[in-house]
Length: 165
Image (cartoon, rainbow, N blue to C red; front, side, top):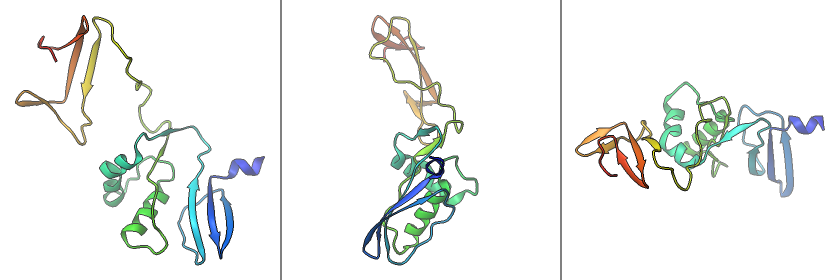
């Protein structure tokens, strides 16, 4: 039982034509071995947050961070994701696809305030809205707005200027 808890990564695939599985307690560098074809997968053993859309997150922010920043974002297995992507960019032999960072430590960012919106809102509810500041800015009339508050009045929504939205 103790040895199973140490397994963080596993590789499965073909080694010289034979189906093979390898278990790893750690991995800091990706190394290509001749005669191996398969997939390396991580198995987080701690509570973590799962990114809702890893592909969009990678395309929007993380690839740029990977290529331009010496500060590593707080994701589990970040170094392996980065090494795999670099191998793809450089035409690394044997690397066909890379997963994108999917898990973060639960202490990596503020998330406790997030929740699904209810199906309906009672009269008098105030709802604050804002854009993802790194990528978008709100538009209000001919200007911009970083955030807006809406108020529910008998099932209709009004802004702070008492205009219906």
